[in-house]
Image (cartoon, rainbow, N blue to C red; front, side, top):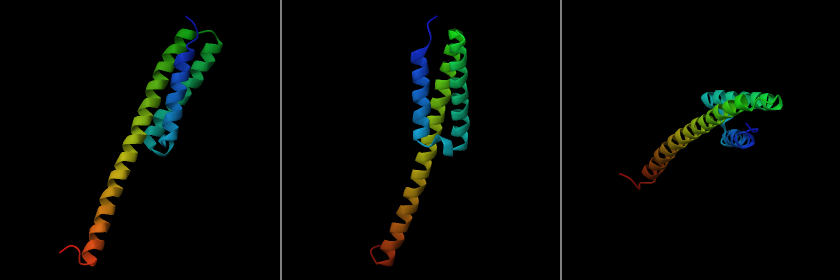
Length: 103
């Protein structure tokens, strides 16, 4: 089996994407991100030893964990954005009421 270089690139790209959306600041996402990073590192080690099958398996799991971290971070960001929108709306309603725009 040839070295799984494309899987390595895909896993690294997914890991990078998760970091860019802030996965390190979301506890559940950080765990998934750390698992992905460890698996990528292990895959690189076993690839260097010529064990491409093990590397391939590790990289499949690493990409899945990185994508999970990305989804967890996005979900957290969406939740925070939704809460902020509700708070902004309430503040605007209070302002409008204070100015007599709403009765």
